[in-house]
Image (cartoon, rainbow, N blue to C red; front, side, top):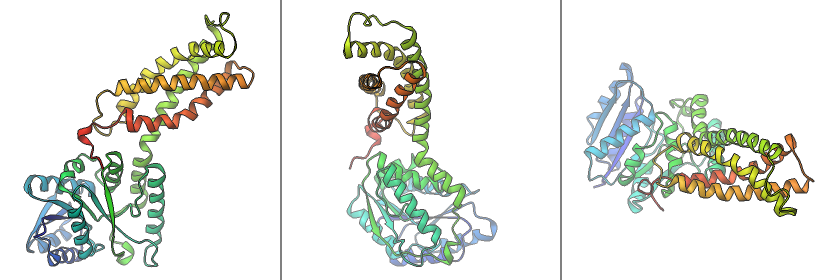
Length: 373
């Protein structure tokens, strides 16, 4: 007997919900959770029709809370009431996922119980709506380019998830469609293995029954992908300006003790270091606090982030001072606004590498929250 729970969140379903539930029963599912996400009185009876089927349980939200909230409700129910479950498989209630494909994804998950299985569609066919094809191609490119995740169908709702990963799924934020994007991002952040299984591409009535809001939900999704980097950029820019102003003041008005005792490039470097370090120390305190609390705050971080931050800080300080000295020397010296622009240019180049290092090392998640491949 298949020990996998099928989860179907739905809002104001039509007659296709019964077809979905009965189809799951026919292919062998014995535990099916339907989540009524606040449907109105006109459509709530569809769940009662399904409840008479063997193995079907209906959970209700009094008001519409969104697909992400519905999935978390189901995951929590399985953890509490299905302790022997091998995992779950999520699918949509509009008959876009064939029961045979749902079964195939479940069986694939049972073969690789540490991996999430994604049922992916082929978007090259002529029956795929234009908005779905273009939207998925764009999002797949963004995931690959900015998140280093190669996912061919970022919008798929057919996902098989091992029971061991359900606590992680409950920790993921987002109440609506952004939850599924957050789930994919979490796969990359926690190094959770995932595999793709090809499924049949089905669009009924040009996907008119979908509750996806193209503008509002797309903004939510892309803000998740770029949100952390934007916050990091704003934090870095703000601290960079503070540092640049302090450094320029020191460079212009403070006489380094190395000015008359050490000559050549070494003297210039030591002078640069004396101007740069006090400004960097003050700005780093501000930057660490902002990054820890407001940028990399998605989940608990491993201990020692302060030590790792200042190891990176020291390395960046030396590299930045060397690069700044080289650039200023090449242009024949600079002060005031010209010096400010040159040092800012150097720091911008180092900025992108620093983001990656802070994300994967400095503010890395605690080991107990990570799933290694």
